[in-house]
Image (cartoon, one colour):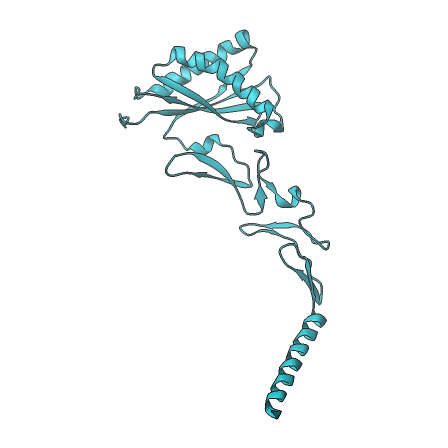
Length: 230
């Protein structure tokens, strides 16, 4: 398929660094550890790519993932480029992997190298966990992990259950559970009593319900009898 001359090309790539240890701080793009590692890779890769790729414009680190450290990135070319640019990028990054340890003390598994054009699924490079769904903005083409109902992401961490994040979510000894597609529930139910409300804050029992019903009926009869007598 010929490249649209009005559209710059995006190339995604992923590589794995084996002599670095992953930490949960690397999920959080605002953390000092994330920013420091992001800056290190930009300082190493950008000059290398600029000197070896025509029309290279910029590089963006998308995220870091566990195993040892997986670096997911994308680069942008400012002008239309040859159809086989992904192969060229792969060969250049493969060479970078081969020389990185000697020159930069980075052990990169060259067999982990994955390079794909912008026609690839952008969700592949988001690495959403099992409690999230990757969604692509149809206008911008940007992909993001959206937590399922009952799950939330805090400080960039993978989606976690509200039951784990907020241990007091349920009141009155309610047990917090996640119902797929619905979210968190937690109300206890007994033989003739139950709790209700978003956090199980309201106690209800059959005697109480019956009493309220009787009082309502009695009130209605009292008002009706008053109307008849007058």
